[in-house]
Amino acid sequence: RMAQSAALVEALKRELRARRLTYADVARHMGMSEASIKRLFANGDLTLGRVDKVCELLGVEFSEIARSVQRTPRQKRST
Image (cartoon, rainbow, N blue to C red; front, side, top):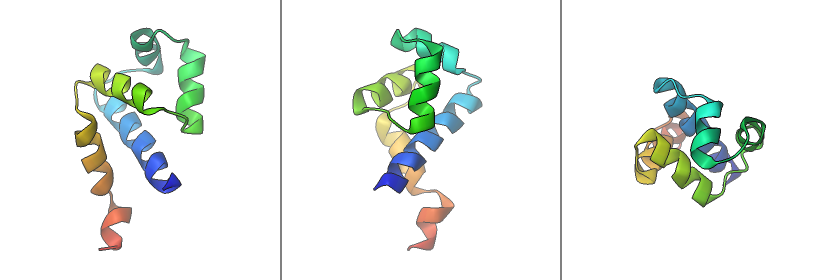
């Protein structure tokens, strides 16, 4: 399960990069400091509420991110 959490955080990072959004952008959207956002992403310590806020900023549904995690190469090997 921890591997899925880490994969979710990586998927969020990929989506942020794809949209050229920074941790500073995430921090402003969430009303937090950039340092706190960096720490959350580095530790993988994102609550579902925070994941929802990041998804809101990205303009995607949580389910889209979850599906992208299921499509990673690591997941495909187990099928």
